[in-house]
Image 1 (cartoon, rainbow, N blue to C red):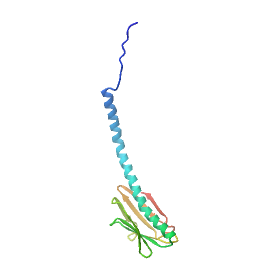
Image 2: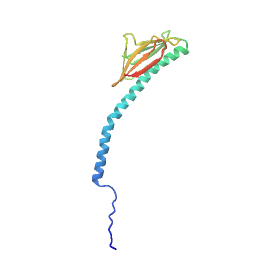
Image 3: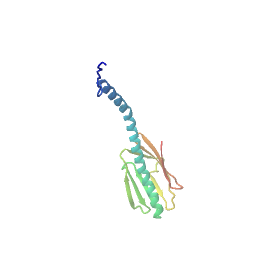
Image 4: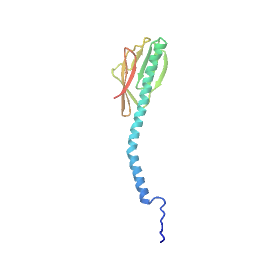
Length: 149
């Protein structure tokens, strides 16, 4: 029997490492823009949810406290102000600097919620970055809904 020499191979060659790193870099380059867009969409959804939550909370307070509540949206000062029927400020909600709000009608920046659950109605176009939502307040039910455009 002859002696057979075995060459033990341990580790990776330089070429294998370079190819692996190249594949990882290409994959990261393809995935990074997608993650950035989804992060923007999540941020926009959260900002719109905060805007809608203030409207819903005002409706809830009008019903439970049996007192008219009015939400005034001021896009310039970036505030949502909730007042009772006596024009007493209940609370304010600061809006994000990234948020742009437009009312469907010129005088539509005010929504009134009645103790019976009805409202004056309203429709807002809320934009954050490149993402736009439509927030509506039903006049009959006072229900607040939002959907992405």
